Length: 112
Image (cartoon, rainbow, N blue to C red; front, top):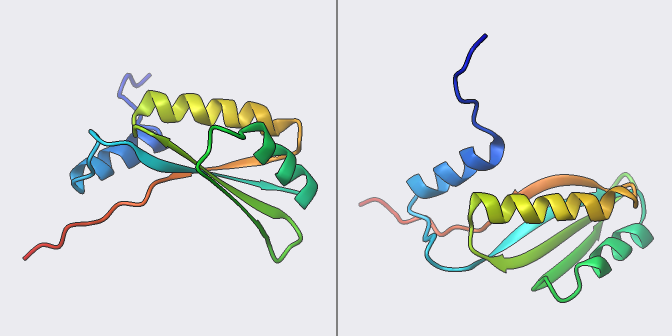
């Protein structure tokens, strides 16, 4: 049995962000993504986070499903992102939603 540490997706992404020079000392809008079978359920999910988000975007997908992007201003920490992602999952599971992950925009510095 291997006792080697297996990195999860969030810790891998955060490590790559650190290597890319991401400023963890500042707060950032962190985007969380989910899909729903219809617009009504996507809107219900968005309402559950009213007051916590900076921006909510809903978009229809080609297959008839709806995509929700919810931005929360926060520090980009493993625990903070994990806690919010868990709350997000709990809130949308009853609406037949599926979490698709999270992301943050990062300005990459050019190498000269």
